[in-house]
Image (cartoon, rainbow, N blue to C red; front, side):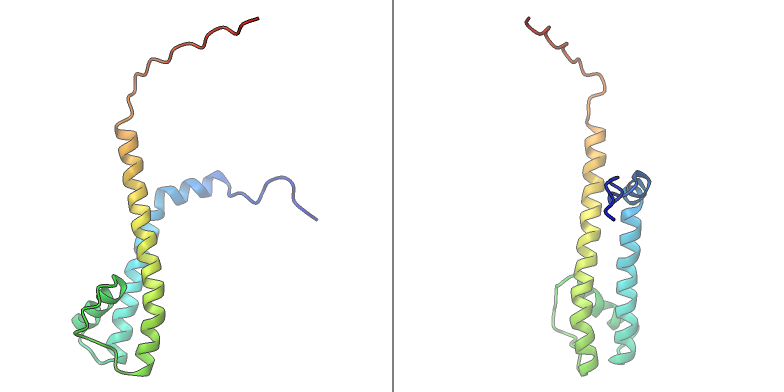
Length: 124
């Protein structure tokens, strides 16, 4: 059976929740991605915690200084998937931050007392 009630759209409470908390949710995922990369590189490459965090950050932000490079096949494969997922998450997080700032700026600068002229009477 097909649903013609339009229930495929999200309920307004879910949309409002996402709009209110998207920055925190995606920011938490971004921090989790950095933490995951730090732990994986620490154990796979036997780097220090600082070097592992440094490489994770450099890889996800696409800076790529080249001073540290993965040497094992496992860490190279992890890096491929890590970079793709990390770039996606960081981009979504930046997008949500920019949308939040734009919405705050729009609300801040909207004049509250706008004189709206009345519509003219229709001709008969």
